[in-house]
Length: 160
Image (tube, rainbow, N blue to C red; front, side, top):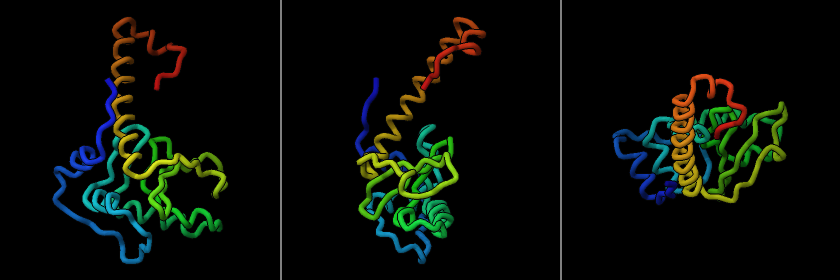
């Protein structure tokens, strides 16, 4: 049922129909890893799953720049690579490690960054696995509706 795709499969799927390439702004002085650069310079911002929206190079630069004025030295060491549909962010450090950045409070800073101990390639694998999970949850919701339209409306449990 669930299958972890290889990073190469994911890269090929994401970029298969891409014919353009938009580089990062010249002012971006972040040490981008090759896999990340190779993908985000070719795509439009892409919703892979409900938890994983991957910014293209232009949107990533804009989001990162919007946080560059934050009076916290820690957040300046990260590049914003995407977000969730809830508005939390996926960020990457200079070593290519991906973190989750919780947006839920007014504060910004290191305490809001959760170390997931994954690289960008592993994040892509997570995003595609989460895409499969989204599909299963949606199929489950549809089956609940088949049983009763009211069941899904009044369902007491959180799905996905």
